[in-house]
Length: 107
Length: 116
View: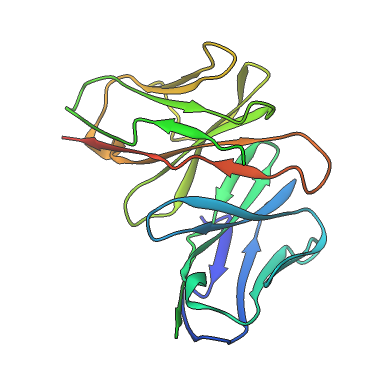
């Protein structure tokens, strides 16, 4: 069973497009993390959310605790945004990961 | 900017051998984690460590695996008798305990383990 579901699995966008990646989860959570995994494999934490909305530059993350759903938005997408975006939920001190969304932004 | 350091970056070992992967978390972080990612698959949680003991562990983290914080800085993952299916990238991460916005996970660059 998958405690965390992401959609879409793959996404190709033209430079400048607005992008949305969705995450649904089935467990009670302490927090939700959005991660970015670069083609070389390194992982960077983008956001940690327990409620509401956060913004950092062109990235916006929202969470709806009642609906157990989070979205990651990228405004004015750029080829350097090409990466795998991973949703991970933390329950206590245990993590469950989504399978990731592979984003390719074409110039 | 503080970072999590992992060594080695790549280790090749024979099946049945013991392997120790090392991590130096960020110094003022309190929670430490090991994850693994088999090639082409999703990241999987292995274990969390807090206050010098295991906090939570997954089904993957069986008796083959152990973690230690032998001194104030290092955090190690030991695999006692490696199997082919242990081949993966192993990520260490640490997390602070602080106000919202400071409570961010920081990942190491990973240690790639290849079991032959």
